[in-house]
Length: 257
Image (cartoon, rainbow, N blue to C red; front, side, top):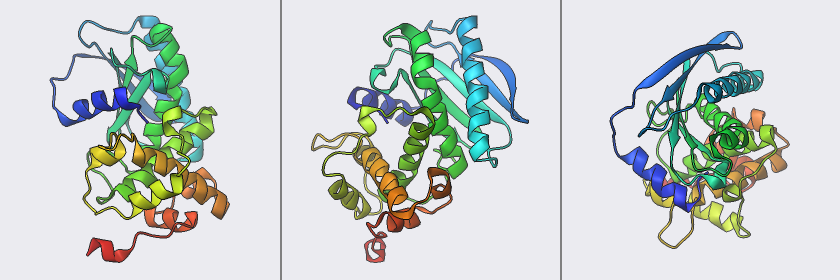
């Protein structure tokens, strides 16, 4: 999840096409399947050889860890790492996105307190777990396996948030549910099918941020508590099933007519 300062940067990055930077490619092997780490030089910023080596080690370990829970995460995977000057302090200095099956983009902040080395240690695992979970679900920007609906986005993002938090033991403040989380979740559930994604997942005109992410985190944790299912078991369930298991009920079919 991204706090407000990051939201604006990420929304701009996703909305506009830019020329791809030159990539320095290296290949590592992880848990019987190929993982490629690509390092992009951006506006004169680049990772050192030592940083690249540390990133590759964490990537290999993270991929092996995710495959312990989701052995279906097979096939070629390319993760592109780019240094950026974005304000990513609230997420451990690292953010990312799952562009397509087998394609993850990770951005690491050069201005993070302690620099790139600290960001790699503080935020990289969380970001990798989160985005790899999206690949398992098929929740990618391109070739997405799901239909429209903020209620779907909230469920899928909530699953990735809770999965990463479970493995790292860390919770970012921006993902914490508000005191009135149930009201937020019901609001998300009953939105028009093609509601504005940016508005509900990132920055709402009423001043709220990450409504979908924070509602999704609450939704998934509530579904786990009510059902007794683990985050891994819940990953096999559809968004509608997750809403039902949470006790909040499925989205009324009449809203989609």
